[in-house]
Amino acid sequence: MNLADADQLLAPTPLPLEMGYERLDDGSLHIATRTDMHGCTGEMLEWWFRWRCDTQKYIWWHPIDHISSTWAGNLAADTHVGSEHIVVEKLTGIAATELTIQFRDPTEFFAPHLYRHARENSDISCAVTGRIGNGHTPPRTADGEVLGGRLMHMGRDTPWGLALRSHFYLGTDLPATGLTPVEVEREVPTDTAVALLQHAYNEFTFLSRILPGLHAAEHRDDHPPVAPW
Image (cartoon, rainbow, N blue to C red; front, side, top):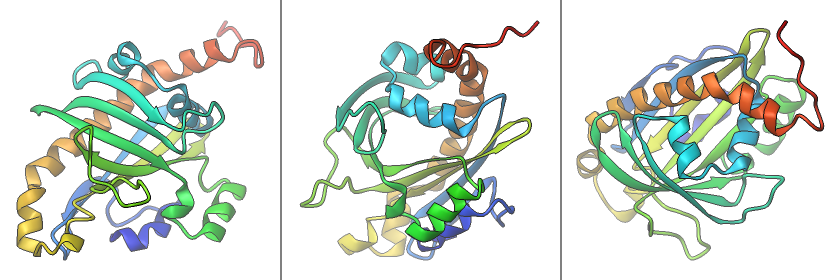
């Protein structure tokens, strides 16, 4: 599935690639991970990214791979869009890597009318989308858009919890620099796809174990939690 076909993620029906990776014609990589987050909701996931975890909470999230976390950009309390997550993390055995994740409005990736319909129809209950850049000073466009790759975390509420689809595109902007598909493939090797696939599944499985309790504690004044007995 090419990035231009991302509107397919707005439908709840299974895709040909739900868990795995593929090399695209331009040499870039597409990685797909599905994580069943039992007891979680899309509201919880979007709140998590608005909460903007510090390093301690970032390590709570993935105690194996996560190393450090700071934030920049637009830090408005009511949205994660416009914020930038500046992290150091491992990817399932790959050496620690500096990354910048710039969260963007979903309509940058999806047709606005289709995205709106999917939200209204409960085909999706959350969308966390953005641009991924290598390093803490990644290349950018003149307008400040981070160049490198893309990420999309798309969730749908079910009776048992959140069905989360995570899709990553690595090397997305490299062909525009004049690199051939073979050169792009050299820049984003297949072992990175395997590592990211495993990392993302582990990351959100870990998060599913702590997210409901954290969300309940942080919202207890507005939504008093119900005791489980």
